[in-house]
Length: 469
Ligand code: NAI
Image (cartoon, rainbow, N blue to C red; front, top):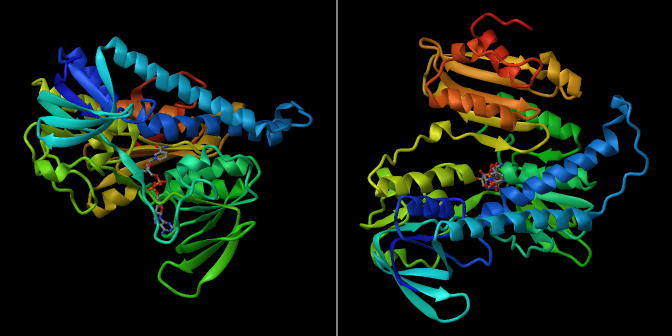
């Protein structure tokens, strides 16, 4: 077994493993260091994948519990088997993480099971999971792809039992009576939805005055209303200052964000979902001259190069949206750059999806961002109530909104809240990748009746040619 490779990737998550595979495809010898017993990082093990499995199962549960009479389908006695629901989620995760292991093997990437620490810019000491150490050297590059960790709140210690992060929220043993979620971001809304659908009272406490601060506000207000209809309760402009563990429950202390009188609320589980922080603990970056920025991220220049020659950083440890597909983009482009190809990335065309019901999906700029930048834009919106397929399906919640340059018509942003928004958005992503205009969407023939027709219709509205509204 050789200890010398062309490239060593630290981290086997959605940034690291695709980087390793691509490097191997480009003819390099590659090792991927990962200490978790399974590959795939946060996304596959405790993030995107298990949460989507739970979101899907609980949406089915909600549908059959309350939603099918209208279709003429009566179902008696719907029962929840939480143990099976969680087991299925674990099986989905296990299948996919094993799949990644096979992919590394197929691509001749060696998975080194252990924790890496820099000894020199081209040398790592690996503390092996099975015991002992190994020293690895890289002739071309070492990629740091160590991801992110849950951001914590002072005074609220996560025990993954009663005070939980996304990790604990994926495996609760019973449905809590009252779940208090701290943070109305991606995790809070998705996992809050999961447990609400299974019957928990869910209160979401948010520091700011609305949900998901970086979302287009029109869409955010819409989502807020729809989630309230599903029974989620919101407390805005409020912060949680403590969670005292009592024998049978937790006493959560709340305060207005700007300061003021404290009030308390009883809960049996508290979910901390106030963001994530880049994870670089124990890597020994200081030893190779890499200094973190004020947010704990590794600064990089074009091509993902760090301040240390031969060391690159990708994924959640650098700036940009903390999204699995963005980290994969980083990983692949970084390796392409090392191989002498184009390493440029455009985060403006990275889509964002929240897998609530309905889904919210967006790409490009929000209306607020365009206003702040002084860009002259036109907008067109189209509600799903006017989309015939949504009517057939009996789900007409939401709308499609397109923002385009007032002068050139180039697409600047597309925001969708509605059924299958996370799928529909990719047409807009592709159009934007090609520098497309709203006219391109309007001139594209869409099959009828389909949900993506809403994009074409919104484009027609923007152009003053609205047909079905
Ligand atoms: P987030 O950044 O999406 O939202 C955190 C929320 O917590 C913000 O609204 C913030 O204002 C609020 N907050 C912060 N401090 C607070 C306090 N003391 N009290 C009350 N509210 C407070 O972070 P989240 O939801 O934890 O997700 C972490 C990361 O994971 C995000 O970067 C997200 O992009 C990613 N993620 C993506 C998903 C997707 O693509 N569907 C799903 C889940 C996570």
